[in-house]
Image 1 (cartoon, rainbow, N blue to C red):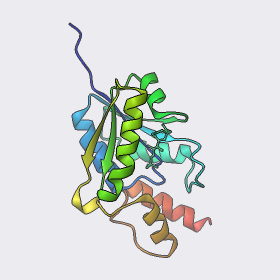
Image 2 (image 1 turned 90 degrees about the vertical axis):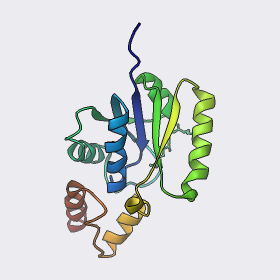
Image 3 (image 1 turned 90 degrees about the horizontal axis):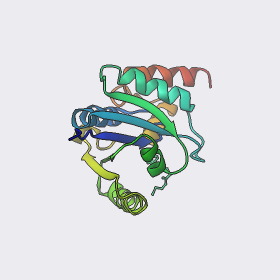
Length: 164
Ligand code: PNS
C-alpha cells in the first residue's frame, strides 16, 4: 500500500510577506510533508513588490524549513493544486472578518475540486492584527514595522522607500 503524503499549497499575494504569514508557513510545514507557498500572479491590484521579489522574500524567510518551497500561479487555485498534486489548501484566519470570504472561497474550491481539502489555521494572537496592506501604509507614513515583518522583508521595504 502506498504511503499517503500531505502536500499543501498556501496561496496568497504576499505583498509583502508578514510575520503572520511566516508563522503560518512554519506551523503548516509541521503538518504537511510538503508545503508550497504559492504567489498569485496578475491580481489586478497594483503590487509594491514584483512576483520575483516576493518569491525571494519567501525563500529567504523560510530557508530554515526544508519541506517548504515557493512557486507562482495564475488562473484557478484548484488547477494549480491539481498540477502540483496537492491535496490540501492552507489558509489562515485572523478574525471573524476573514471568515466570510474564506468560507466562500473554501466552498467554491471544494465544489470545483472536492479532492482538495481546505485547512484553516488560526493566526497567533500577536499576529492577528497584521496585514500586508497595513504594513505598506504604516511604513509609507514613516512608522516602524520592525516587529511585523521578517528582517529580509524590512530591508526590502526600506530599500523600496529610499528609491521611491
Ligand atoms: O492573500 P490573498 O490576497 O488574500 O489571497 C487570495 C487568493 C490568492 C488565495 C485568492 O485570490 C485566489 O485563490 N485566487 C486565485 C483565483 C481563484 O482560484 N479564484 C477562485 C477562488 S474561490
